[in-house]
Image (tube, rainbow, N blue to C red; front, side, top):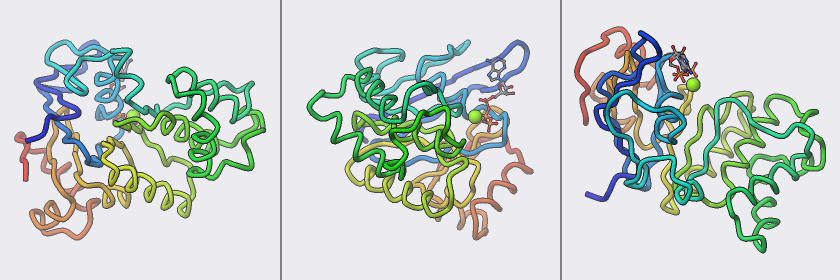
Length: 247
Ligand SMILES: Nc1ncnc2c1ncn2[C@@H]1O[C@H](COP(=O)(O)OP(=O)(O)OP(=O)(O)O)[C@@H](O)[C@H]1O
Ligand SMILES: [Mg+2]
């Protein structure tokens, strides 16, 4: 088996008395798109924060490319899009992209080409020279996604990337994610949109602190005799079993 890109073992994460992740295990193999789904407040963003070294766990291990984060060298290999946009509102879209490209250490000779590509993916080319403070919520999401694509990272971690994005553009974003996956990139994406959970290679369901299911959408559908991930999710959530099953 290839080395995991992401690996979490026996992770315990509490905020005060609240246990968010309870002996939590999670692995992602290279070249996969994994969709992490779970109810609001179940800990999806917390999983990401622990992976990126933005939060520390009370117990257990979390590795990205075999290293614990934060690791400055690894950051340039990871494209991260946070759930809350962190943009410089007084700068234009283009200036934000230039700033983050420099932060990520993108070769200066490649910056304009990359900005052109990532802004085309999110259909922001015509808005690039406007101040970000005047962007709509969806435009800000799209700019954040474009920023995460800069640097052509081997791992993309996207926390609800398509919130506020219209259906047509959402489809083209998913085409781009599939294209990147086909080039060998690994992608972890959280979503509330159950249709999107149909588009991933593996669905990971985080419920009550544990990974309750982890598998290919078609295999999960067979296992649960359901035709949609949404129905499976509702079933698993109501069962709230204690054991994770891998299929
Ligand atoms: N810094 C923090 N301090 C205290 N509690 C926190 C903190 N961050 C998260 N939590 C709590 O941990 C739980 C999990 O939060 P998290 O943001 O990871 O959930 P989520 O699955 O990403 O939810 P959503 O789908 O709404 O984004 C929530 O109950 C939240 O209130
Ligand atoms: Mg979240």
